[in-house]
View 1 (tube, rainbow, N blue to C red):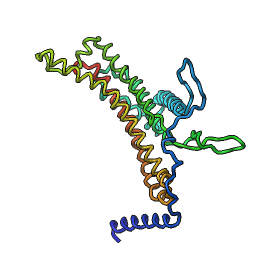
View 2: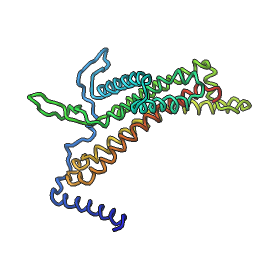
View 3: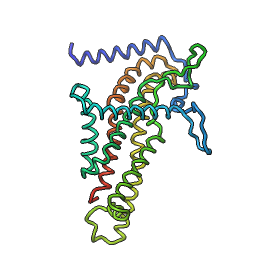
View 4: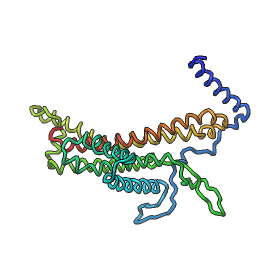
Length: 303
């Protein structure tokens, strides 16, 4: 039997199994009680309000604190491991060090002194976002809406959640990046020279109206980075979690077709491996790399 025939036979058997499950379990009808959006709802674990501002501790705060602790521990661990004898762990450490120092920082910030100054920030940013993404795919007992009674204590059930799937977190990170690279540009060049550097070279003989029009376009592009940088991270992580939610059984529960879970679960496993193995790292790399590009562009002599 050829490989092609085996593939089609496997696909046919897979759908036959789905039809069999459908005949056995049937269709219970649409489930109106299941609300997928509740998976991203943030209920306060500890209510804290100071001066009318809500500082409550919730699931997102817990994940951010966990990602921060892992980032700090990793940075300290790398700093110490770089001084020890080479081994397999050392190779992994050097790979991470090379990625953040040479690829992300050195490859996008031309001036060596500026690259050295901003390397710790960019490395910490990369690892912080990476840990935030990765732990978002690891089931943790953080679902307070559904609890399990253990010796009279309601223990939260296991769930996956990513702080980066909440637009407020990527937006705050983007605001930090936006203020940072503009402040670095002003520090390096001065306020007015930095604003003048927004104009591309070759416009020296252009009339003031034309220069003003191009400057407005450049200014809009700088402010648009607040949207593009934050939404890119937010949308990719949110889309991945929604895929896992629906493919992992949410769609079957929502439609009331239990057999549908047998059809979608292999897809959920594929998306889980893809998100955890590729997307989590890729989005952290893109965010840190774009930050390095912005800092490099703000400090470069020409636009």
